[in-house]
Image 1 (cartoon, helix red, strand yellow):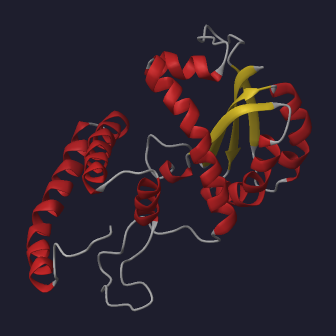
Image 2 (cartoon, one colour; image 1 turned 90 degrees about the vertical axis):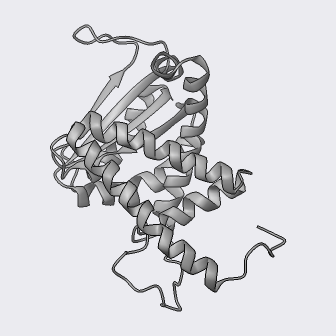
Length: 240
């Protein structure tokens, strides 16, 4: 068994999206039940294509511990039949290229990057999130909106809460046993982390601009909260 990454390159984001829905969603169960797959996940990058630091077109990385040679042998016909795949490339972690760091496994690579505890945690839960994501692509033909459209009135009886990806994350946290205050702390940590990512990829000015936008949005919410508190009964629910 060895750690490896397979990169799939697409001419545009729409081809990437079709690859995820038409190939990867169904392939995931094949991976999990095969002898050539031990553990792994995938990343998609097309959502960053519009930024200067993003890929030129669509990009999906399949990251795994297993037998890379057998996986390629079993799956390459599927890739080559897919209309819209420009190219694919395999890199084994135990094969040094141009002085690149080598690792005995994907787990070892994760622990080197994030520490023994943090690396193992991510190694274990990224495979779970990949299974959820693969099921999501199989379930939804159209992506969920990230958050409610701020320009849309929330009096639509068919979707009064503006349910979207934010609600999916909330439901998952509830199912995992986190309470209201855990969830706000998680949201705060995610904000801090994403601001650092914006800075790393787009520069300090972009990070400060996003911070100012977040701070203004929270400040503006105070009035909305006061109005909601005045109009709704509070402190009386017995179940979350």
